Length: 56
Image (cartoon, rainbow, N blue to C red; front, side, top):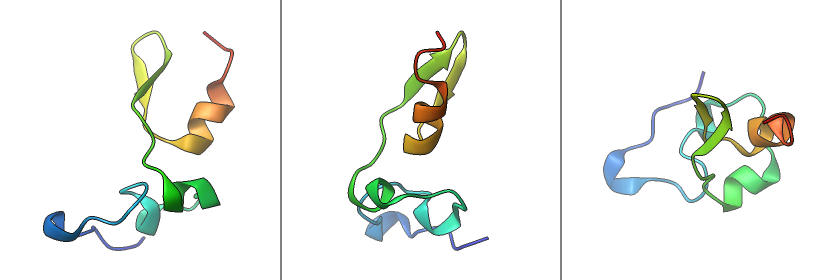
């Protein structure tokens, strides 16, 4: 779903916002950092980062 953003006009916040079904308000304001959520698995998502918090 959604549309891939133009590289010359990237939106503020998460670059996947227009294609994401689980986006929250924070996604509109801030781009998430790449996080290691468990050994060898990375995520760049505010929602998924919270889901895995404390599981390392």
